Structure formats: C-alpha cells, structure tokens
Image (cartoon, rainbow, N blue to C red; front, side, top):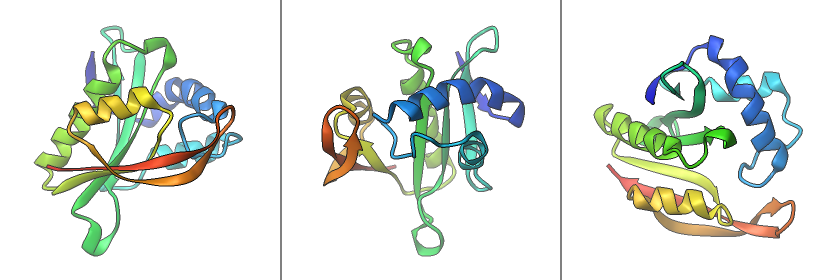
Length: 162
C-alpha cells in the first residue's frame, strides 16, 4: 500500500464507498442524502487543504483522507483531518497508514497540533485507532449525533500536539 496525492481522476473510485459510508449514517455527521457534487467539493478542499488516497499495488483506491488547517487566521496552526476507508479494505491497516501519513505531514508542514472535531463515540474502532496514534478525547458533546440505531450519542473532540 502506498499513499499519494489524490486527483479528480480518483473520484470515481472514492465516491462509491463514501456514498455507502455516509448513507449508513453511523460515523459521519454528513447528511445521509449527500449528493455527489457536494461530496466531491467537500472532499477536495482548496489549498492549503489536500486530499490523499491509499492505493494497493494495482492502484486500487483503498481509502482516502483530507487534511488542512482546522481554522483560518489565528487558529490556522492547528490541523484537522477526515478519513474514509473502503469497507472492503477494512482490517488491512489502511486507516492507520492514512492517520500516520496525515499526522506526519502536518508535523512537517509546521502545524503545532491536530484536532478531530467530530468523532462519533460509538465508532469505537476509530476512537481506538486515533488514541493509539496519540490523539486524546478532550471533550464530548453529549447527544450531538443522531445514530440510526443507537439514538442520540456523543461526538468526541480529539486532539494531540505534534
């Protein structure tokens, strides 16, 4: 597996698994009816934001991440990121590889910290992964996410210095 900059040519490989993940409504605070145009705009941010993909030896997209400053101006020294892994590639270390890449790149680009704004508390695999990469839960917004089967659950804010 390797991680490289994404191009718009990767979108047809990203959109099918992104659509499934978002439609499930379990892990992203995105509208489950998110249309493709809005999704593409969201997933390809303007610079200094960026999008990467994790690909296998055949070039198949296994997952993707976006990152950039969490805020503008005086808050721009803190990065943020979002990740999506094709469920078919789950358990292969794709999320970890993307997380390590994004954290390393943020550090090398001079960011002082990384902040994840909305990690669904019932997404225990993601929470455990981010904690294993040094992220800490610094707060939880109670009942800030409406899970389709578990009802109202919290959203964690996770943070780490770089």
